[in-house]
Amino acid sequence: MNNIKTIVFDLYNTLIEITESNQFFLELFKNSQNGFGMDVSGYLQCVMKNDLNELRTLLPYEFSILYDEKLPDLELELNSVIVYKEVYQILENLKKDYRIFLISNLASPYKEPFFSNNLDEYFEKMIFSCDFGFLKPDKEVFTEIEKLTENKPDEILMVGDSFKSDIVGAKNMKWNYLKINRHIPVAKEYEIKNLNEIKKHIKPYI
Image: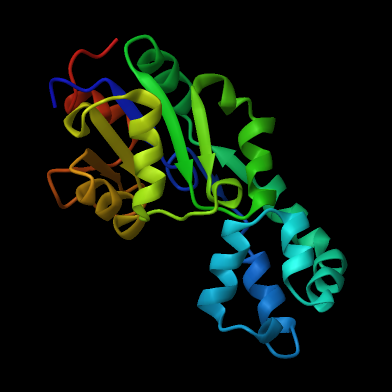
């Protein structure tokens, strides 16, 4: 990877982690009377493709009741988020030589730790599925980065933890890719155990 100009990061389990997860939105679904009239896959996609105000309009009123009732559970999750120890230094170094972007599949409340931990200052632009209306690996998400950067596919590197969302999405676009495995052994040549290992795969580095 000698001609990388842009690096695109995933967010959760790549830069930050929820240490006390209770799968808040899935629990709302399980506690509803009939799954808000949706199957679980359709519901979770809806949650990640729309902001909270839109969800309150799109989903039955029961959703808003359950959301407000169980809000402390969500706050527990958000307050448990940690930034991986190497993240700030790596982003600071990479920003000197590369354009840095973020694309993340998430429900809108989960944006908050990204901003409260001041990670936004390292990124030229962030694409959150709940604002953009598409989910990785949808081509529209990756195409938006190409429009913003005007880079060729082989000039872009995707770094994320999800094979389905990050790696397949990047492969489909003919981007470069690295899969981060923080909690399981690295087995493939494109896998890394933390962000410090990016420097082994790209040149120049800082």
